[in-house]
Image 1 (tube, helix red, strand yellow):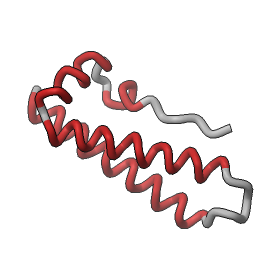
Image 2 (cartoon, one colour; image 1 turned 90 degrees about the vertical axis):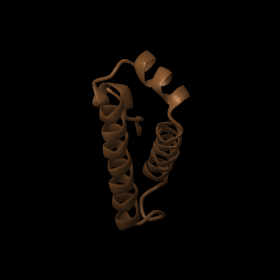
Image 3 (cartoon, helix red, strand yellow; image 1 turned 45 degrees about the vertical axis):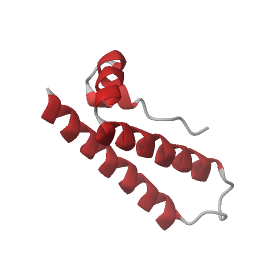
Amino acid sequence: MPVSHDLYQDLHYPREIVQQRRQHDPKLDRLLDEYVDIDNQVLAAESISAGNFEDEDLRHLKERRLSVKFMIERQLERKA
């Protein structure tokens, strides 16, 4: 069964801090929304039966999710 990544654990920032910063940083807010959207797409793709979703497409989604996570990390560091 596919499991969502714990973004806050990966970021090494408490959820409360990220949520506070999100309220004052439109770019961070947008990136977090984008991450959740892509993560949901990955979960959906992983739950589709074999053969209905191309491995290449799933790999691309995972790469996009990782890229957005790195952008979130950079944005958080800018405001630290």
